[in-house]
Image: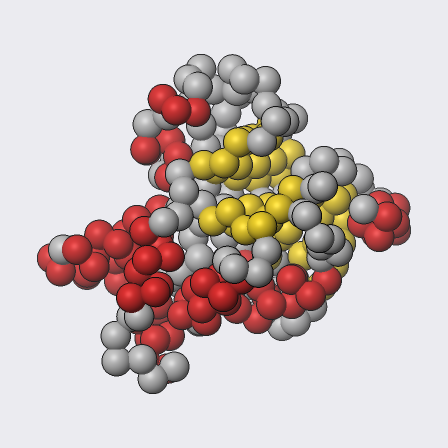
Amino acid sequence: MRTFAIGDIHGCLMAFETLLSIVPFQPGDTLVTLGDYVDRGPDSCGVIERLVKWHGETNLITLQGNHEIMMLMAHEDKDVIRDWCDAGGDATMASYLERKYPEIPSAHWDFLEKTLPYYESATHIFVHATVDPDRPMNQQPDHMLYWERFWNSSRHVSGKMVICGHTPQRNGQPRDFGHGICIDTFAYGGGWLTCLEPGSGCYWQANQKGETREGRVGVEDEAEAKRFAREA
């Protein structure tokens, strides 16, 4: 059974739906979403609806990103709504109005509150932002998990590979640091939404235009990359 990871969606429902249609998921596979489902892109409401529905249909592990934290903070403290809106929350609120919701449904708040800080498999660590390489995962500070950029110079003390988002790769390509891979490929900014299968290094991408492409981390030749993706 394989584990897949999807990077920062940021309200890009078209890219998300298109990506789900091309990744060769099989029964028993696990999908980890790395957080930042909301803000900036055009349909955060639709993205959360899709994730809420999918929770009961597959092995889905949803992590929390800093934008979920800001949205939850704005829900609890109206004084910080403006800060959230300035960080992209205005697009999230507009998406609910567009879908004729008078307010954000309680099921959506429940979903956000239940998102996880990280997920650890036998070989990989999945997290929104980054990790302190010298601390075990149950001792990680929040600012590392949700807010810091991934520029780690060394492998995590566990020896596991880190799979993260949050640090946008504006060239649209996953970035392989050797001990970690960043798959925030700037979906909301005209880039791509990425799904990575860390075991093989294969990845699939879709954008808001409905375009798709495939590749493999560390493979430069496009034809060879497509072959690896088909065989995954």
